[in-house]
Length: 241
Image (cartoon, rainbow, N blue to C red):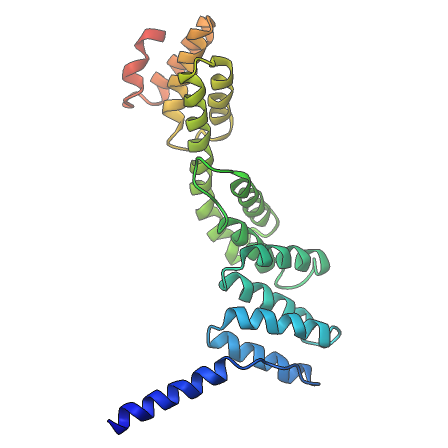
């Protein structure tokens, strides 16, 4: 019983300490170490808030720039993705030649990535994420973050192509064949490596056929049959051959 009471008392003390407001001192070094200790304990939201005050108190210290990057990481880990997005942009703009600039750009891309929605919702975050990852790979191909960026890109391409396919089929079902064809054409031009390409080719051929553009419908049918002979959509394309 005494052991239980003691453990309970210790937990109260720890909770009290962890909930204390951290004050900024006159020493940038001391405060920076406070921030790192908080980070090690996983108190990311508190780190982010503390480092905001740190930057105001010690703007010209030797730890100031690294504190900016640390705050960006802390806000990202805290799930504050809009904040980490903003902080990443600011860091890249202020310190373009910093040794950890690739990491800052990676945090920016990952902040976008965490805001990516489902296929039937707004795809702007997806496009922003792709752009950020592609720039990271192009500008820092040798960085260890480029490899992770590459692995994530295909899933993002898949998401966008799936979105285009969904919208295109909606227009097709509404007999708005020009609008439908435009969506399927986007998949053909930009997302040929995604699973949506086979179905998109089928519906593009069907859209052209409904519009009376039989030559184009025939070309799409041949393209589908030639590149994906075992696809279920190839077996349905014979009406346009």
